[in-house]
Amino acid sequence: MKVKDKEFELKQNTLLFMLENAVWPLFIMIYLVLGLIQPVIFSPTFFTYIIYLSIPLGFAIIAQTICLIGGVLDLSTGSIVGFSAMIAGVMLKDFNFVPPYISFILPIFFGLLCGMFNGYFIGFLRLNPFIVTLATMMAFQGLKIIIAGGFTIPGSYLPEIYLFPGSDTTFSITSFFITILLVWIFLRYTRLGIHIYVIGGSQDVGHMMGIDPKKMLFLIFSLSGMFSGLSGLYYTGFNRSVPITLGNEVLFPTFAAAIISGVSLRGGRGNILNVVGGTLLLGVIEAFLVTYAVSPEARIVGYGFIVLIAVLFNQFRDNVRDSILRRI
Amino acid sequence: MNYEHELTEVPLLKLRNIHKYFGKVHALKGIDLDIYEGEIIGLIGDNGAGKSTLTKIIAGAIRKDSGEIYWNGRKVEIKNVNDARRLGIEVAFQEMTLIDSLDIGLNIFLGREPLNHKIRFLLDYNKMYEEARRILKQLGLRTWNNPKREVRFLSGGEKQGIVVARAMLFQSKLVILDEPTRNLSVAGVRMVLDFIKSLKEKKIACIFISHTLHHVYEVADRIVLLSLGRKILDVPKSQYTVEELENIIIEKTMKQDVSV
Picture 1 (tube, each protein chain N blue to C red):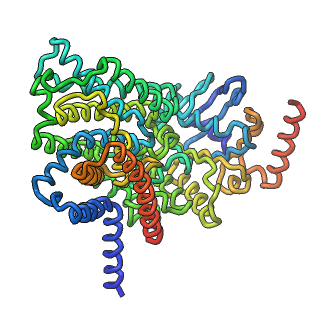
Picture 2 (picture 1 turned 60 degrees about the horizontal axis):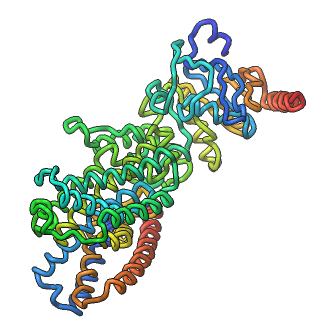
């Protein structure tokens, strides 16, 4: 009898583990299926390319994940990516006062500023995050086009060291994984990080327990902006230019990846390590579509459906998980 | 009983002339209240009487507009929840102090998570779960063997147990229980009442808010009745039966309604 109980418990724990990290088996499954259709995906070089391709978006996904864990959403993520990359690009192209070796700080700094702007309105003025980030989404998008003067900034105008993080495959991939690890430690092993989960669970409870929701929301959006800026830096290196359209197709995939990785839309739940799985999952699909030269418009349609499927998948997984946990 | 106190002891918490406005609404109209060490106050009153407002001021969740607060005879300003906690005031509003999506251990330590003694900015999860286990076991709660369980899977009584464990662990001097018996089963109510009695044994004072005089009556040393922002009754329980108190409450409330 005892042995049977133990066996049952082990089975149950394995199932729970699988459900919580379901994005990984899902990623492998989709990788295999798409690989059977398009075998080139299986080659090691192409696999590295898939990872490399996912990195710039990956930083924006980190930004969105922090917001979702904090129980809010950031609609301006994509616009901050484009705006911070563009303003940094223009400054590096037209003005010489920034030394090249610290040039990569520029987009991070401007991203942070944008995030603090959001955070001020949402945290301290208590405005609705949906409306505020919707407004700044449009504002930053427009600003990006205005300061660009309608032109793409070619990579030749930018310092090589500025392009390096996003263009060097090894550096790009390694730095992303280190960042993920650091964010994971921050979210899980520091007080501030855990308080993001608390605020995501309930702002009122946070307030009653001495955690200030105003400051936490300001922090959440500042971090979101900062990682969006970082994403802008990597996009610039990846493209070896700052196209006027940069960041336009970022917002939707960030939601898709975060949600499919098990980050709850209700806030307060989600593991940043699994978000890597979601990032790679989107990378594989993106790479697959690229090999078939699917038009960008059709890809947007695809992303729309992926978000829907991700939400459904997440709900299904949560229901199964809850029904098991309730019985324990 | 409470009169003996006044001659010999300094009250743990002394409130004098507390006022609170919400816009034009005068929610508290000069409340005086003394609470002694290990004393259980049953705070009753209708909706809008000011019970929650008063306790939130004590807990630091909102700020008073005027009046004085003394803690062990010393005048204090309670500006926020952390100020109150430092004094040893613990809030135990079940639905207002637990995060459903986090586990038991984290919930007990919410806002006061233990830090690793070597790397000062990292959390010490081992210590957190160990302490959680210890305190839950000490309280005889079934949840002790699984401190990593998410709180949303617990029953009302078990959740109340977490709140209780928190108060015990941080050695509070004064615990505020806002309607701890609401939404509880008969067994759950029993558990909360037993807990409140056990607080008394440990010399922890308690403000027990309830709509139900019968729950309060069983455990309270003193019954305080608020109505429309005023304290209209403050009597030691031992002098009255439940029926007598009920009559007094009805009489007092009606009289006030007429005078207003």
